[in-house]
Length: 288
Image (cartoon, rainbow, N blue to C red; front, side, top):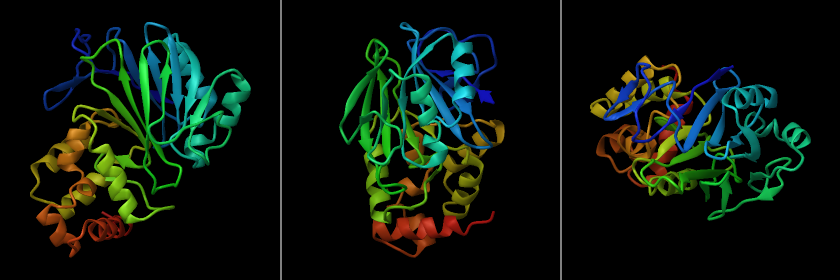
């Protein structure tokens, strides 16, 4: 089990050496902030998260698979689990829900229409609160699954802190999910919706796929310097979730750059849906 605390704010960072990406600094330990996200690696590449409202000592668990592992991290952080959040119904993201609701029978579990053991159905535009200060807005992003929901989180008491977005298997650092239950046009629409979030919104994705994604991106858009930065980030960090923003993804994620001439040439397509479809086909067959 691996946990890494990531928080964003203007107060002093601890003396641990930070990872620097552009002008942002990230550290494995940070002094108290209002909203904190703690990734928990629950399998070889699969992330669950604790979304913590520090003033209240309350947390939501996102995409729980292994309740015991996440509870151990919550105990270490000194917080109480008060909610579950599920991005989509696939077992590696929702497999712990039944155990979660039996362990904590009074808490809500938020998810789309096909999520098992949910207590609260959420749809596009839905809103709820975690703890006293964290506002959560639901964004329907169908394609990987029909019930896919991304969750945009902000700290209402600290407007200077960057928000975050839990993207499940819709958006990865430098990539996107497979189209299991949707079309290329739907994935384009879903990623375009995420692109409307503030550029400083931090991306928390469902899997550690960054190294493979950037290797593929280099074959599609080799002259993009932003992809070089992503390559360096992946080389220097085993855990890359939380080290990218929506603004970064618009610069280095080929699946969010369908109007780029180099990407059109690489796919031999012009229309966004056709470019997306060919990109996904190429990525599915990529063995680099």
